[in-house]
Image (cartoon, rainbow over all chains, first blue to last red; front, side):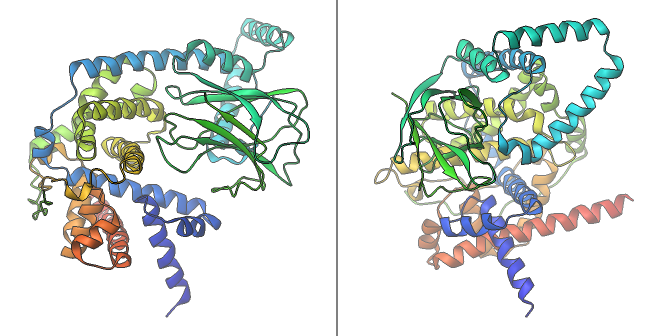
Length: 282
Length: 208
């Protein structure tokens, strides 16, 4: 028997299991240890197969007999959509006008980010060849003005979120299980309806990304017992930094946020050997 | 109450009207991604009943279903720019998002309900497909491949995917070892995916 085919069969089962959300912790770790881009793609294909089968197994009778969305629910969803897209357009305008100062390290290796970067390059090229000089002057003035006010993209977006999110939760950082040498102040804000949030950290020690990185975890018991990965990040300047949260899964109602120190690239499941900061939602 | 064991499903029969309906149904999510209000309304009308039905299977309480459907649509607005029509049908994309959200919610509920309602005791309708016009191409292919599986594998997959029963519960019901149930489910899914891939290849050859 070809040992490779046995290994391939095992991997295939893990991928199928992942798509059906049935992996136990050991299987999850086994899969994550050496998962490839092709395998991630395959998991998506399996998930699509599961969804297709689910649609097929949903009987016409079942669909007809269980009812439909009420008008009031439809109206509520439409109102929510209006609010969501209005906020998105507003954020988009701000994003176009400013550049990030504090970058999330994980985004550098994220495929989506790469695609976005490529798109930005195309946009820039198109912009350079077609934009009128006056537009450039206005854009430059806006950004210079923002910089002179000490505003970064993150701060602007954070302010925007604070102003527009009706379900905003806010929690102050406090020492975690393994406090840092010097106290860190700041807070974390999160909106579940926007699925967006920011960490504000003052006095956070700079990290060497080649040795270790910070990782945020979102504790959301309504969603899952396991904390949601909020993204890996670096702190590369002293003073106050504002870092956008990159929740890897949909967050419902967070009750706490924790920052751990992990190996470069972060981890899927944290052992919580180093948990310097915690923010509990009151 | 006991579980109603799913009967064998009615085979699909595609009519010319069904085909026309599908061809006329262009994706709505690209327009949703641009915040087009008409498209948002269309999306609600097009997928509202499907999402409601999927949610209804797992959530017994009407107000909780409404909450879930509301959250799912917000997730659809957020994910709309990611929809790629070259990778699959729009309805499948919507169903994927819906399943993920429902499974998350379902697990959260289960953990809070330890000792209360037992999903295994809920009566679930037999999945008999009666209106193929409501089913997309990918679902139809998936079903045809599903029918080729052994009865045991079909039963395990139905109970796992459609009824969302835990493997432990399925093992108990079918009096099988837990490992076997897991294996049936995963191998069944692998076989369906392979079969669908072959069908796509065959269709492409027929069309060439």
